[in-house]
Image (cartoon, rainbow, N blue to C red; front, side, top):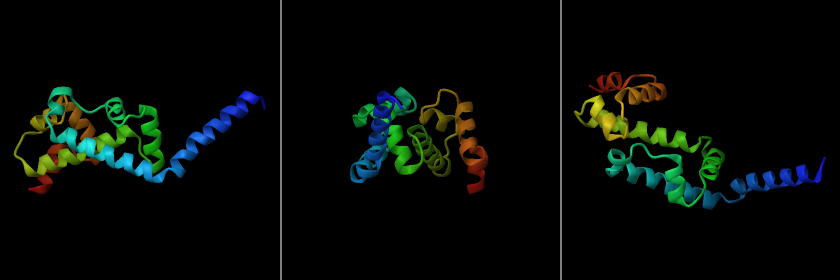
Length: 138
């Protein structure tokens, strides 16, 4: 094995070990991410900027997008995009059950340009369409 390969292996092990040894810091970052997503969806940001991006969240947390996804995957088993989608579905379910807004209006409020994209994601994540989900509550 060449010395460069060995150096890369050591570097990779060191990089991955930090996710195990820095649990308190990692959980603090996870808490910050949750607050950031809550604030983003509670504000009018989705109307102005659309869905939050991995890059936007990473920048707000002062880490790289790759680092954020690696950290989340090691702590929760999900990457950053999956966390965004989970929060989005949580918000959508709340709006579908607590408001009389149409599915299209909810899609726009959550930052989707096209309601079809929202319907597709919602169905993929919950196995039911937003309309069927709403009807199951009434």
